[in-house]
Image (cartoon, rainbow, N blue to C red; front, side, top):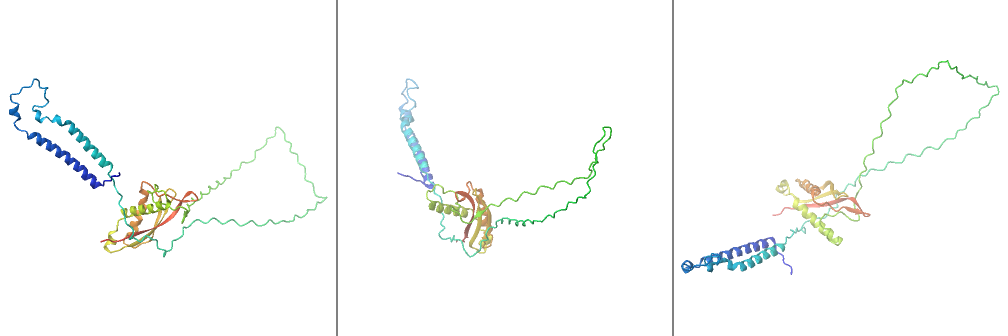
Length: 304
């Protein structure tokens, strides 16, 4: 049998038990104080020893109720423990049925700019084969004169002059290539999910629970700008942001704003998701986590 007590019920039951205990104490005290004539009754009676009775008058001996009081205290303690263990808190459910949370298709989303690969270099020109003219060998060509390279031991040999020209410094190394920008996907096999629903078994249940928790988080943190309230501005703000491999939010951009500071207020809430204890469950493509674009509408609606 399942017992559930709300916060109000738990408080009322604990207070009721405390009042019952106080009431019983006051009743017992009144009953003991209501006994009259005990002084005259035991005026001539003498006890053999002060230890014979633990109380001056046996009729008002509170030790006779020790067993009953002990059992009642144990029962009251067990009742309090039972009530506290069945204290159940319920999450506040938010109804978004009256909100139009569909993303409009009448605005253009600029596709992400990715770095184009460099063009391949042009092919080298084909080699040109040149004919080498045959040189005529003349019989009467003068032969080079032979010069002797012998040297004497005592002859001084002069060293060649040193090259005093200053050599130019080598050119600096080329700068490192710019970091490669991570690819952000539009649609993947498994889209990112708001945290807190991983205990669900089916994918549809996880997606529905994640969407509910996401909007509960947004509307619990969202503050309606005063300027928009004073001017009666309401409508739908559309935002676009990226969720990276680690579940962090980045590149938040307001695609459609209704004015009055509503776009900035919605953007601030989306950026605050990086301060949550758990980040988003990243999207997956081919079994690996990837960065994914996410488009989200936030409705501003005046009530009352």
